[in-house]
Length: 253
Length: 248
Image 1 (cartoon, chains in turn cyan, brown):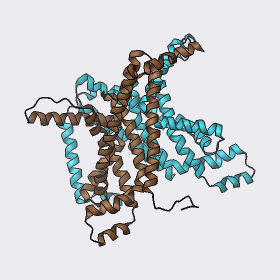
Image 2 (cartoon, chains in turn orange, yellow):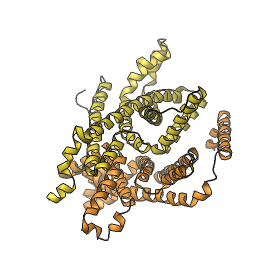
Image 3 (cartoon, helix red, strand yellow):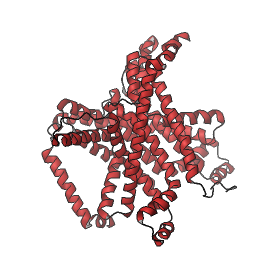
Image 4 (tube, one colour):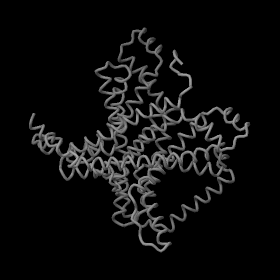
């Protein structure tokens, strides 16, 4: 139990007591009476945050694999577009990308009658598809760069060995190249996923009701400033902790 | 084809983007953004330098407090931090002003942006600089100590020049984050590039034109800073043997 021993140093005990006192002071003297009223909405918002995070990281990663592959070993007509895409995504603020998609595409679509009458229209009228699309593209842009390094860091002898066994190219990719590349970048992926979590509140600016949007609604309804923000910070830290823990388990297992 | 052309507003976009039109507003926004980014980056470096020294050479309590600072800042979204720091900052200034007998103070947008983003940048800079200082061979610092150099002089003459080559890539990243984070201040209502763009776009209904133009401006800034940082890194590595092999 070295962890416990490290925690039980005198100065840390004092700091923990100070912290506990601070928490108690927050609980007693700050206003929390708004929580019961907004709890259902907050849970819904939390679910939206987690859902958007999960979908956009998954799809973003799926997109990042071909992007990384194209940059690492692709011919010039694939690698140049891939590199351009990554540079543009990484060079512009995410908020701008979200607004470009939502306000730009969103103002363009209604002008086409055939889009308005199509089956997709009920979705295209809402905000969340644009939010998911923007976050997916952003994650793919950052991850494509990471995967490029990962693919080119796999030892060449491994691939040559697979080839000499007569493995087809796709099997070789699936069984040897991709697993090793992913294992090399798991720590980076964990960090990037936490960055992605920290990007989710931006979608509140295009009327997606996730956990951040709930807190700003509490703020504007009740004029309570600090309490919703503090609680929100704690919620984000908790989710980030869960992600970090999950990736650490994943790396070991 | 011409229908699409007009739909995208390409024909009118040149006129809209001219300096007498909304283009001037966009450039003013860009100037504001760059000002905030420079200030925040500088403040972040100062905090980071003290933070890194505190984390490496400070006492137990300092080290734990700094660990809490960097962990919390890096786990909470920038947008939430910006709001918290903005309210805390304006509350403190107003309390001070009331205590001194003044009324409510109007807060300067650029100064508030620098304070808010600087504190966020400081946490990241602390980690970057701590890693860089740790990468300096201990023998070099010990040699300086054995010559009887005072601590500040060791920092100025040995540690900082020797750590530069390790720190520059991380600091380049930080600068890019700083320029892009200024866009978040649009949510709080500062008149930087993104907010100017949105105002221009919504009053002319030419969303694509303005957002693409703003994206282009941001891209120019990041590409130019990439080139500048490449030169700085080359300068910081002067005299070091190249790892590429062949010529040294």
